Every structure is written in C-alpha cells, then in structure tokens.
Length: 485
Ligand code: NAD
Image (cartoon, rainbow, N blue to C red; front, side, top):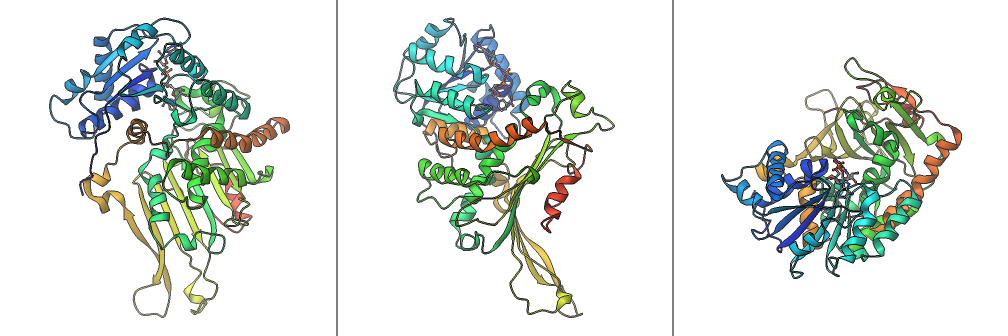
C-alpha cells in the first residue's frame, strides 16, 4: 500500500540548538526523510542557529554526517542529499546576547512563507529566545515556536515557562512536543477507538477489568546521569509520555478530530485523576549487571534517592472509569525494550461451559515498540476431540504485515510532528493547561517522597523491576503482562 504524501507549504525553519544532539539524531534526519518522500518543498529553507562557531559550509558537513549516521533506512535517489544540503544555512547566535540576530533577520525577509522556530536548547533559554524573536521583529502573528521537553520540573516552573512564552506568543503559536504523540501506533489508538463501532461501546468500567501501560527500556542512564538524577522516572517519563498515553486511552470521544476538541478531552482526564496513595506506588533503582554499573554509580551519587523505575495504580474519578484501576510502569535496565498498552476485559458474567473450560477473558494489546501493532486476544475452542476446552488465541494485526512495506516503515515521530508544525496542526502537541494539570497531579507524589525520605527499592538489571511491583497487582488478584519481545 502506497501512502499519499501531500507537500506542505513552503517554509523557513530555524533550529536553535541546530548543532546539538537532538538536531543531529532526530530533527535533521527527520527533515531529510520528509525531503526524500517529496513532502518538504524544494524552496523551503532550514537555518541552524546555535552558539557553535561555524559557517554554512561547515554546517552542511555537519548535517551530512548526521544524516549518514542517523538518516538511513529509506530509499532516496542519488544526489538528493546534495540538493537537500543546498537548502541549509547556519548562523552563529547567542540566545542571551545580541550576536547573530541581525543576520537571522536578514535571512528571513519574507513573512509570507511559513516561519517556524524550533527551540532545541535547554529550557532555561526558551524565554530568552522568545523575547529576542519579538525584539527583532521575527515573531509575526503567524510564526510558530516548537519547544522540547522537559517542560518545567514542577507546576511552578511550568507556569513560569508558560508565562514567559505567553508574553510573546499566543497559545496557537506554541507547539510543545511530546514525541510519543507522534508515534504511528499512538495515533492508531485513536483510529481504533473512534474509527470502529466494535470497541467504543465496551470501553468503560462495565466491561473493562483494568488497563496496563508499560514503557520498559533496556538502557541505563548512560551519559545523561547528571540530568537524569535530577528528574527520575516520574518526571522524565510518567508526567509526560505515560500521561499522554493514559489520556488517549481514557478520554471521551472528542466531537471532532480537531486540536482543541482533542486537547479539551485529554485535560478532563488529567483533572479527574485521583491523588495516588503512597502504597499504590513502587519506586526502584537498578543494580549492577555483569557489564554495567548500578544506578548510583552511573549517576555518581552513592546516596541518590532518584527512581529509575516506577510502577503505580491510578484511579480516574469519572462516569466512564470509576473503580477501574490503571496500572502504569516504566523503568530502565529492564529485561526488554518494550512499550505496550493493554486493555484487559472482564470475564464473561456467566459461563455456559463447565469448569474444565477454564477462566478466559479478552485482552486488547496496543504495541508501540518493537513491532508496532495491535493484538486482540479471543477465546476459541481448543482443536480436537476431548470436550469443550477453551483456549485464547491472538487476532494479530502487525502494521508491517497488514500494510506492506510502506506501512511497516512509518515516519519517525519527529518527522510527522515537524510537518504538523508547518501545516499548523496542534492536535498532537500539548497545550499549556494540559502540562500544568499534569504537574499539578505529579507534584504531590514527588513532594511526598521527599517529605518521607522515601528510598527506591533496588532491582536486578535485566528484570521486570522490583518484586514489589508484582505485589502491587497481586494484591488485587492481577498480574502484569509479561515483559517479552
Ligand atoms: P545539546 O546540549 O546537545 O545541544 C544544545 C544546543 O544548544 C547546541 O547546539 C548549543 O550550541 C546550543 N546552545 C547552548 N547555549 C546556547 C546559547 N546561549 N545560544 C544559542 N545556542 C545555544 O542538547 P540536546 O540534547 O540537543 O537537547 C536540546 C533540547 O532538547 C533540550 O531541551 C533537551 O532537554 C531536549 N531533548 C533532547 C533529547 C535528546 O535526545 N537529545 C530528547 C528529548 C528532549
């Protein structure tokens, strides 16, 4: 199946932090792939702007290296990279000073083209950039800014960030990225829920027993130890990525697939979350493995109380979900790299079969990685003679298999999200009030740990996390879906 590529309007995209890690690994290769696909217009311009001292020729070499290292995987005609590089420029700029700003203004003479500014720099510079864009007349009423995570480290800092951006830009111009929302399967979650008659009538407390969301990583903190130790799994993963998945699973159907309609419904979910009881949360820190240090050594703090794993039971107090637990977990150095949302349905309320048939229930799994796809577990008769014994089999919809080559290699989240910015579509970006509501729910949990001097439980590397995490569900007569590949 060949997907249609509709070119976007021509644009000028300025990447502040254009020499940084994120630009190198995600933004620039993503743009190139959209260029190869024919979506990026041949007169669009990309301007790298960062503190690094280099000229445009040097930047093109930098971009070429980045694409050769991270951009492969798609067929692209010979010579395309050279043509793409011709559309790149670079300006050394200081977000906090005056260097480079007049040059940038000269590069952006035509305000009729879509103008976007990607803030791929530390959040401490967001306010400075917004102010200088305004000062130099670059922020017209149609220009867009893209901001990266982390968006604050608590409610207070998130509010301050929102306020500093709001001084210069309207909410409709601000694109807060959560790259989980750009994943193909995450959008498919909405397509499955709202594009079929089959699921939505059963998507509630009457039929659903519980929902699990697991995002497990095999990597440790790596070179990000110092940054990670100041945030931990709760701030780094739960407040943003898992919260967004939870919102899409739990929200009411929006009236239209339209930015504010979707974001209004997500916000209602966050506001309906119950405070989490301390005994409904398990925190963990990974131990050393044969070939890697333990968490505390990795972050260079033998007394660190930051969690590299968190599991929790969450309630949503609204008509649809009252009484239904949502179990969330995420961690580093787990046995498998694996992200999945699982809807476990209730057992049927009456069985016509005898006890031998066993206890069966339907399970809908939405796999984000690896092998994006959706599986519905259905109960059938075990083949052969020997009575009516039942067995669960998967109705498997692997996107790669179902949609052929094109569906099997979907655009990376960043590719899609950058094109959405150019198109002016905010549906897959977080609104300021959503981010603040998520922090308002997260803050008391983190503050509670600090006040109680809570110490995370150690867990073995290459495992499913601390054993207390198993207990969290076992107490309710449930079990985590096995973390497997
Ligand atoms: P980085 O440290 O690799 O790069 C920072 C960039 O900012 C460099 O280009 C640097 O020249 C520029 N810069 C620094 N100070 C500046 C100044 N005063 N004026 C102008 N430019 C300046 O950082 P990164 O990893 O690319 O991250 C960028 C942002 O993206 C951060 O907010 C980070 O939290 C976020 N982010 C990064 C990743 C990732 O995978 N790297 C993932 C998610 C979010």
